[in-house]
Image (cartoon, rainbow, N blue to C red; front, side):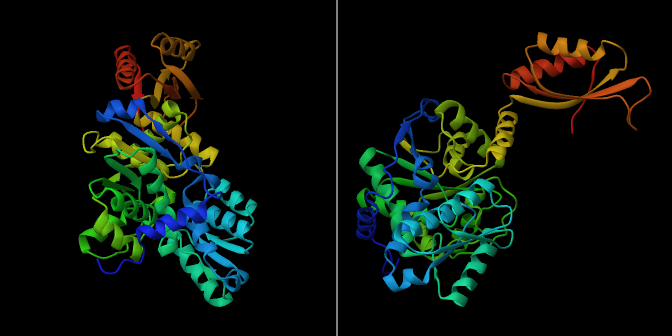
Length: 404
């Protein structure tokens, strides 16, 4: 690595700048994850940070270091939500006008929160990369200062303050596991912690539907991948930043990917067992621990990078998480269309201990015979073995089951 654009001293200076602005977020012990990996696991709760994520750290440092003349021109940024809120809040605190470009379909609570912090929101394209291009064009056109979400030394230094806190709160940490999108958080944290303890391991986690880092690291330089639809919108970045990539290439020990099912299981675990609301991108580290329980040297800290999630999306994801954990069943079942048939089925399900969440009863349809009815059932169960028990009992009793 050549002369670094960000140093440990920059991270320390960023922390001084953030005093009274960013909270020192707690680290909470997770018994269930500790039992899963066979050693202590703590959660670094940046979901409880001001504005709901770690992004205020880097955004505030970047804007605070602008000259008065630059701040007077205003700032412009692009984000799916968390950087947007960080820039909007940081700008408001520092007296600068802000405009934030967001992709179409950005979560409504993130949009409304960004506006509430004082930013003008403009929608552009359907991806973070498209919004970034629009923001850059705005900066070129208006003279506003572009605040990149991850590819700037001040932003990386600000995010690195998470690592300083972890080292103070849990100095014996063996491994830090954290989400990677563009790479600002992972780069800053790795720089901070390895400056203090070179032997500590740092592992980045990406959604496998938006994983630019594995290909980029293999190629030796940032490459563009086309992110597909992922629930982890906060880390769905198509191309790593140049500066974060350089630091991650040298300082991060490995980058792994996780599935949508793993993300939903992790989100459910954080909510049920730790009583923490975390967005899908924020649970990527937890998902990796669940996927690879023996791959990480304890004590482990998993960084929960954000908690800004649409309640409607949360409801869908919880159901997805229940299904991934084998605690949710959805299927169609054919019945003889006679009085009492549906009541008998529901009574039998109750006897089997299944909780009926929803029932749709169809008596007329092209695929049904005259004497048939079809019921679409959604059930909550106690786990995979209970699912097998319920389905097996229904089949033995002559019910016709269909899954789609």
